[in-house]
Image (cartoon, rainbow, N blue to C red; front, side):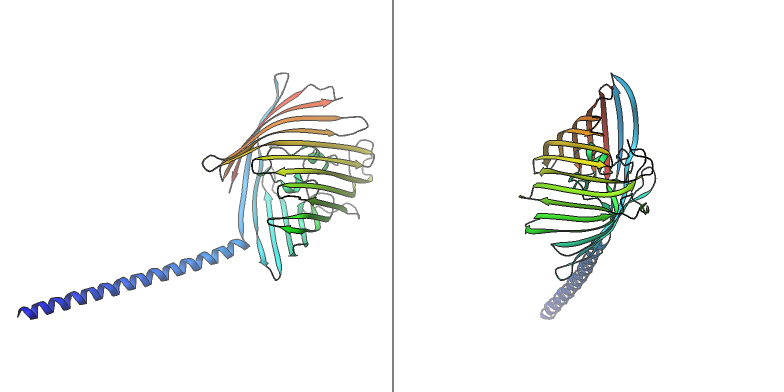
Amino acid sequence: MKKRIFTTLLVAVFVSLSVSAQNEKAQIDSLQQRIAKLEKRAVTWDKVKQHFKISGYIQAAYFADFTDGKTDASYFRIRRARLSLAGKIVDNEKVGMADYRLQVDFAESPKIVDAWVRYRPFNQLGLQVGQFKIPLSIENSEYNPLKLEFIDYSLVVQRLVRMSSHDVTGISSTGRDMGAQLYGGFIKKEGYNIINYNLAVFNGCGINQKKDNNTSKDFVGRVMVNPIKDLTLAGYYQYGEGNFNGLDGIENGKFVKYHRYGGGVAYNGKHAFARSEYIRGNTSALVSEGAYASAGWKFHTAKAGYGSLGVRFDYFDDNVLTKQREFNYTIGAAYQPWKYMRLQLNYTIKQYQHFNQPLTHSLMAMVSGIF
């Protein structure tokens, strides 16, 4: 009797352990299936993100100008409110890389900023078509508003590369135009090319489907040399024709020729930056020129985020014949405590030569929300 009871208990324990093992195996199999499904979804999502990525940023700023201790102007402003859709169409060794970007700015009035498609079958040659940055200067195309160390772009880029409404042609197009360009690089190193080039043709009259107001086109060429990864030397030239109103010595509506040419150097290291450029412009009889030099220190810590502290000297002469010169001396700080927020503070002294104007002091602060 005792043997039967003992045998029955052993069988019961064995059956119990067997059932438990089967249940554990079933649970493990179920978990493995769920993990496999999640991994498959993650791979699929990674593929989707390559083709379709939404990002953007909003920049809210405060500006105040002072002359002789008195406030001339003080106001808040939404500087930029941009939404971007971008992605890769294809990217492999056999057919090359193709990508696109559509970026819209909703500050003031909605407008398309970028709308282009690129295809680069190999490193030495690529084609870009649509609306994009003019490859004139280093600062205009290589430094977007979230990368620039200062709140404003340099005077010469604002006035001769159509970055603002103060451009001598009267065209304000955020440094962009509609057209096409060939680009590429030679002598490829790890992470960069020693020689890069851009050859572009544009309408020359602005952005957002604005039709060309003449049969001529703008031509831009640029060569950038990187002896080392962090150092860039550049030279560039632009030729165009157009109808511009309100220029000194130019009859309204007259079809005029213009040239832009210059060069610069930029160093963008881990702990420091330095950049300087000179651009000269001939717009019919109007001859303008300008230059800037900036330098500063960069910091990056795991806990405190990263940022920069720099100084910049700006010079622009609207008309070299009458010496209508403007000088800006700026101290700028930028700090990004988190990935999705950037803080900037600039103090500028503005000096006007032969304008019979006193010194102007400007204080600018800007917060960027990034997503």
